[in-house]
Length: 497
Ligand code: BES
Ligand code: MN
Ligand code: ZN
Image (cartoon, rainbow, N blue to C red; front, side, top):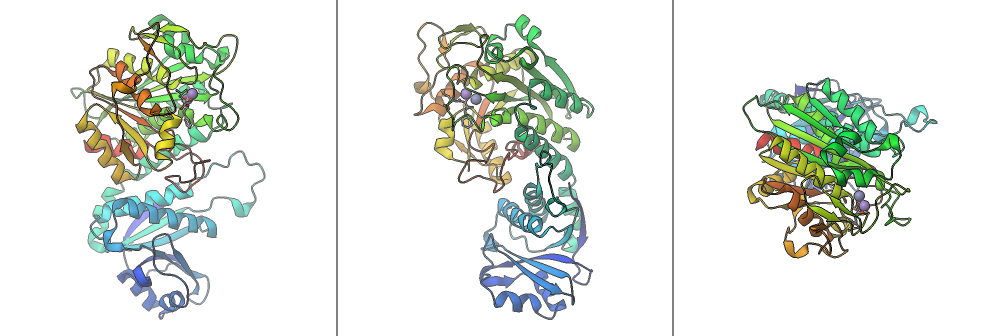
């Protein structure tokens, strides 16, 4: 991860690579003008003789400054006065991609005083988040990397208005913790399914214990004793060393007397569909089916590193949905941890089974005041919202509104969808059925989960479309692979509510 420092803006400070901003009609912001003056108008002149318009997404490069290898990147902001926090994040992504393309090791970004209606601290954090999100790489399995392909960026200097230096520093105090959490989630989701297995998640949780998080791991024997037959059924087809694990992590940053919130993640380490096997074309990306659990793991790490004043229980329900002579069958009837009997309409609707036991268990054992689950639950949600928004399902308007607000701030956007019993799958021989349909399927999944959340205020985030951007035409992050969706969203939610 790059290092950063925050300094008062001074155009005379030596800067080999300087990033400045322009808005509509390629007009330079004041700090950019100051840099331009220092270089005798070279920035304005070069950009005037180009197609650069200062639109959002444009970056114009001026080379040969200071009589040699000095360089300026002029980042277009577009309608600068209308910018929201997330627009600064998007510009950070633009700059990050350019920095990576140029193979730069460091840069000075002249954010200056012109952050419009967004407080400078928030704009600075969003900008650096974007930069970091764009510069993340997952290339450890490429054994033939050439030196020019390696990640080089090490250091960014953020030059701000002198009055903003301390507020910006304060706003960035938890930045490394936040991005370390986001990186962990991206890594877990990017890792292939032959490595990222339930026991691997246990190893990651054990590392978090070193940060002051209490970790309890339920292996298949304890799951059996407790009657968690749904999660066991989903993992039954996997080999002995790949059996399910329920990981419960407790972070108590708000003190002993404050209640806990629970965050539960779907951790299907790979989803073949089971006997309702997925066809070619649908199965290839299913290593992402643990992105909910991956987000919970990254979230716990971020909270601990940031020393957030919140009490949170993170739960990862981990299993591998496989086909074998031990695998569960369509039409099986299973007794859940909560006591409800479940008829298996489809072995490919396994996520709601894993979550049902995990949710019922944490509610029964810890009595959290509120529960949020994250899951790559349905293809139907991805059809509805594509790669731009995750589905939000909740029976609690206050909780839903707060999550929507966090989504807007962090750019991990949510769209509310119905939780209505009219969508429920009809059971034939048991209390509930796990089946779903193509039409309205995201709500069918949510209605199933609601039965297991009972009276606890609850929200469900269907992140099927936003967790992995490999095949999605319009991903919410313009970077291939895992996005880390959920970590920044929930850190914001938990710390601000
Ligand atoms: N893991 C999938 C959902 C999914 C699809 C995630 C695409 C990411 C991208 C889930 O377990 C699943 O298979 N859902 C089924 C449910 C159906 C059988 C009721 C689906 O969406 O088709
Ligand atoms: Mn499935
Ligand atoms: Zn799945």
